[in-house]
Length: 343
Image 1: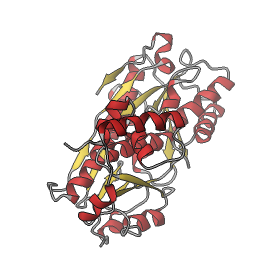
Image 2: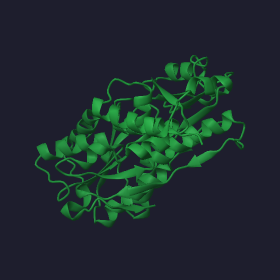
Image 3: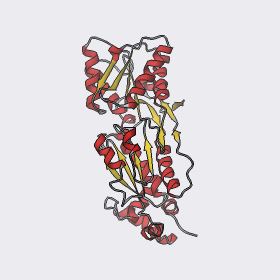
Image 4: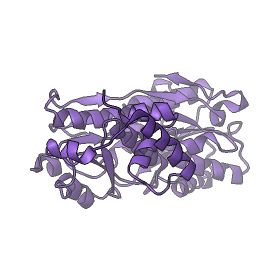
């Protein structure tokens, strides 16, 4: 019976990614960990011959993952899930950074690496449907994220409107009545538009005003943009009693500004973010956040690529991935347990 990376990982008591790093001789593995994994490899008789196996199938054994912002913790965590999922099938992942620029997304989607990859997983920001409609490369393509494309490619995403409404409903249920949104995009960004829409719909349903004066648009996704957006709202004299941020880094930036203005989180202002990144769980005030199932996104993306390579795929699908709201101290105070509510 063939011994897999999964078998070695279980024997050594480590992750599949760690075994893969040892097998591929990555330099950042510690000597102690390398020795531990190697003992399991020797004990089980694991003999990787990945190149030969993939070459026999006319493949390279590489899947490309193209992301808009590697510095964003959400995308870093998502990349880890894709790498782990690919390793289970003895594939390695080539990371590409598009910067969310249309020209780079076109270059990636049109297959400029087609000779070295078996499939492409792409999270686009500015790419248009016409750009993909002209695609001639037959390397399987799987799309991630919330841009809508009526095209024959598998597309994996969460329901951004429903997720935003979940966060806003949580804030309303806590008695908050003046809820700001930070992170509406000045340029085109479908996820931001959908999250603003969810914010607006839930406020309207509750009979609360969806005041455009409490919507702060930004050009970026990071801590600095969140801080600047929060300061801009406060400088107008408005004092919202809650903030829903486009993502967690922006929420963390907003909390910093609230602290500088002498406003307490959550006593004066409750704050909720989006993406449930690790950073939000370890601040002085832990962050309530919408948590997409990043593990499912990674597994489904890799499985979709491999299914198309193997000719086993059905018609292209729009796949919805679950999300939940994880309640923490930034909205419910010290009683937070780190659990969550599903939606």
